[in-house]
Amino acid sequence: MLKGVLRFGVSLNSDFMAAMSKGGARALGLKMQSSMPRHHNYSSSVSCSSYTNVGRGTRTASGRSRMHCRAVLATEPVESPLRSPFTVQYTKLFINNDFVDSVSGKTFPAVDPRSEEVSVEVARADVEDVDRAVKAARKAFEEGPWPRLPGCERARILNRMADLMDEHKDELSALDTLSMGKVYDFARLAEAPLAIGLFRYYAGWCDKTHGMVLPTDGSFHAYTLHEPIGVVGSILPWNAPFYLLAMKVAPALACGNTIVLKPAQQSPLSALLIAKLAAEAGLPEGALNVVTGYGDAGMHIASHMDVDKVAFTGSTEVGREIMVGAARSNLKPVILELGGKSPFIIFEDADMDAAVEQSHQAIFYNQGQMCVAGSRTFVHESVYDKYLERAKTRAENRVVGDPFKSGVEHGPQADKAQYNKVMSYIQAGKDDGARLVTGGNRVGCKGYYIQPTIFADVQDGMKICREEIFGPVMSVIKFKTVDEVIKRSNQSEYGLGATVMTKNVDTINTVTRALKAGTVWVNAYGILTPSAPFGGYKKSGFGRENGAYALANYQQVKSVIMPIYNPAYL
Image (tube, rainbow, N blue to C red; front, side, top):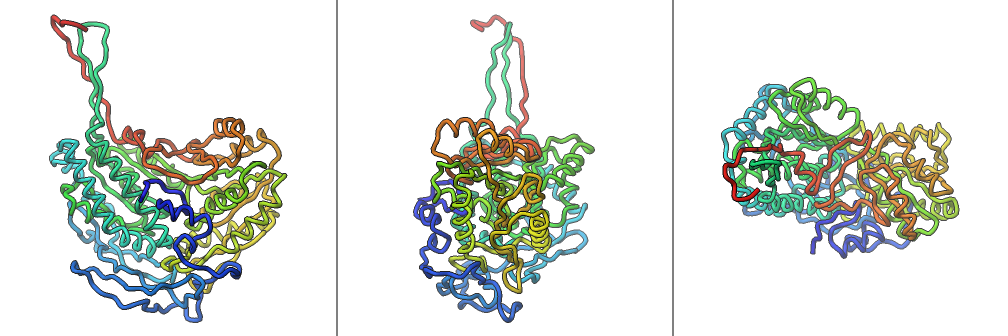
């Protein structure tokens, strides 16, 4: 039974959660060889460009393509990228509940990171297209039914959206795998259920976001109204397309707002299918519009005079530009969820099995492409060598290969730019004198695959310890005392997440309160649940998403005060 909680690298299903602690293939019910070569290369081939047909395709009653794939163990070599089990259906802009070409007719290539080849051309939005989408959203807000529907009716539509996304979760996951290399089984078994759960969670809030009656110092009646803020611009990154869309779209719609959504150019496909499903669920015209394209489209949303709010997840550098655009236009409020350099702290009394596995998933899940990745692994000096030996073994047994293949844990980086960035940081680690324990090389001759990489004896001033890499690079750092590790953890300019591994309750209480981070996990990592707020300190951004706290992002509070004549009571 799905539980609505995501642990990075671990499924929502309790059996899957238990199994994942033993590795990805076991988690999927597959048998693995007892002795495995280092960094299993299932992405390379003699001929790296051709595709093989995995099985015969059929079409369902709705005309959708499905593939009947034979069971493939991850211990078999992949000679070329597997075909996606679904075909791409939607590549145009989605405005006013209709798919339309861009005004210019321009498109941009969506590149499959497994093959480095173009998988499909997608409509490229320019300024005129963003203006069309904003106009549609504004009309839907000022004249349409969405903000005027009773909360229970908005809830019904959001729940229907969740039902349809659940029916299509395999397809949505496949689109993200094709776009940015996310491991397909992790996407459909873990991230998709959590994203769908966010829509159900906020459906429950639709008729519960209300003001209150206020006491006054005289014969007055005072109360507050919680009103939708208007047209919301949502700008997404590429690393978790489905889940991060849900984090922004679900609460904004629950509060009665209309949306112009800009997915990342690396991962535009699932957003277009979700928009189609939203219309099918009964979401009115103009309530959710999707414009695909490059960063200029996102910046035009941020600086648009008729957008009332911007919600952005991405890099700190782009977040600054979003703030500037918002300030120079109509001074619209902004919520930012930005970069991270999260500490993962392992004390001497920690359960070593759990520490090794949780820290492994903290940096290598999703190929390290997580804002909250535990990329600084602090290990107490008394268990440092023991930890390194076991972490090295776990990393070398991580299954690297085609993310569509069952049993694979580790796919390619999202695109060439990200691949090059990660490789440059690996070189920087070597140049700065960090000790390369394992990894550090490309996997295969085709695709943006990088070995899980571990550096030891990392110092605070090294580039790999200071800057966000957004890739599969673990930096292991030795520490002696509680006070020392708190100080060193907080030296980072980021403050998104942190993990503390210890059995000592006093240590837990001391460290969790001292760390400057928006989320601190204890003896676990990456647990996300719809009710728990998520956001950062310092350069990791401001504002909170998820939970009841997120509702404030999408509402205005208005005070109403009037005199009362001859009141029976006050």
